[in-house]
Image (cartoon, rainbow, N blue to C red; front, side):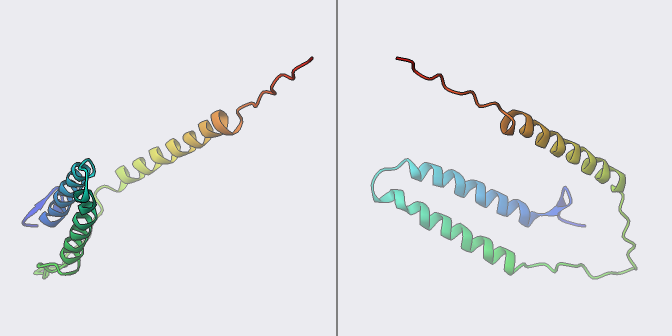
Amino acid sequence: MAGTILGVGIGVFILALLWVLVLLLCVLLCRVSGLARFSVIFVFLAALIITTVLLFFPRATDIPAPKVEMKIVDKFFIGRYVLLAFLSIFFLGSLFLLLIYHLLEPIYAKPLRSY
């Protein structure tokens, strides 16, 4: 596919750059005093409008016109299942650690005062 970087088009990078710049501008505007502080809302809404326009009105078609019959082959099948297994083990280990360190944490009684 022409015009792709790491398997995604240039539009994804434009949206990422837009939101990184908006986040930076919002952080800078939050530190300003006075009425300029509330311009964060307008910056966020402008970025939201630009994002919706770029998502709903793309310039290129979603599916290129097939010249020959395309055969879809999943080349990363085994790697995807290895990653799924690793994430499942990590998730179950995290639940086990949550059970040990958070839910089963002993609650010690406070000593009573004796007069």
